[in-house]
Image (cartoon, rainbow, N blue to C red; front, top):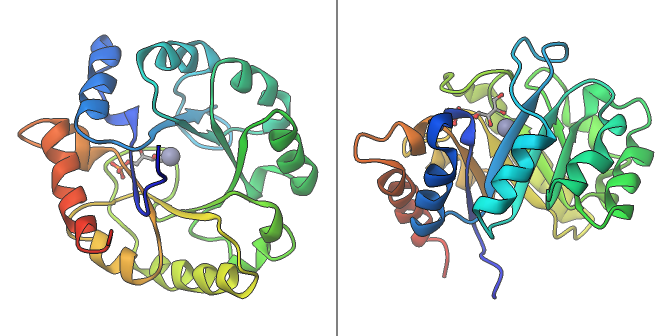
Length: 226
Ligand code: DX5
Ligand code: ZN
């Protein structure tokens, strides 16, 4: 299987959880590249969602990579559980990891891709020392905790800045965006250098269903994926 140049990762946060398996299947058949899974603890973010049990159910529903975003305090306590549940990528927040370097190494030692993410209020410079280590940088373009929030345009400059930081060290890491991705915001995000896109509302709340939502975003990527 060849690696795509650009990735769409539907966030199941906006899915119908009474039929989660079917929603994931629809995404897979609709051309999704990864499935994004949002883990929230009610402490680091004001919302609570799911844990390893549901990740394990997602694992049984799809062969797509599970892109797991840990919005939890002390994520190092749960890395093994999320790995055992079948995650492929684990992304932790700079703001929750006093020993970020070690936490990223722990993720990679479990055989997973390691991602790092930062809130809209956290500057790109916080990534500088660990950038050579990471497989993915996730830029939060909303404040984490909820789906369907408005994209924060002031985060675009940071996307651009991180693209330049990655280029300077010749890093092949993905530059992923999370929050308010839509057909309206995608072109500017592409221009800023992002190449992986989480989309909750734009996929699952599309009036013609998730496959149509993915198709709209993929069409915008198609011009670039040459
Ligand atoms: C927000 C989550 C996102 C969320 C994005 O805290 O990390 O993954 O599902 O949802 P949309 O695409 O609706 O902004
Ligand atoms: Zn997320």
